[in-house]
Length: 221
Image (cartoon, rainbow, N blue to C red; front, side):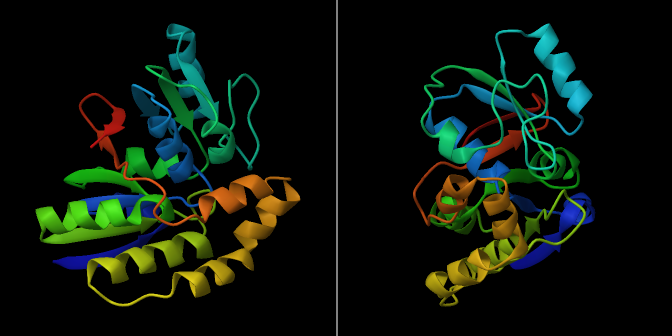
């Protein structure tokens, strides 16, 4: 099993085999939280206008979104895993459009299978991939707005790779590094400290979101 770390939107487009899209701050965790709270499915969308269009056609769907870290006009909820984790989303249909995570999901077109991961579900993803034992695994650290490397995503990808290969890791040290990075500072400036704390919890969920290209939906494995 060859495990490769890819970065940003270009990395998502190159990803092969089983791919894991990693957006620690915050789309991966919001998606995990949506499914954890009972959502029926999630439609990831790259373009904001397309997301508005789907919402207009399906007014009963909930639209989650973010641009420049903040909810765009007309969305039902922002891209906040902390808030999402408190919602009752049983059987709700969701659309999500973000600056990074949703871009990576819809652009990983060479992948055989697309999973969404973060620190929250590392153990579940490791067990799933090890059971399948694919030839290639691509860990896509999607980065800031999908074009610039983000330390939190790169470190999460590295941690996940080490877990897959049986290499001992120090999560406490990794967490301390992330708390000093630009992404963490950005969330603090946006008064999103609750999301910062939530996104750095390890193995709090056994849920593995998977994107199905045919239906264009994220569902639980």
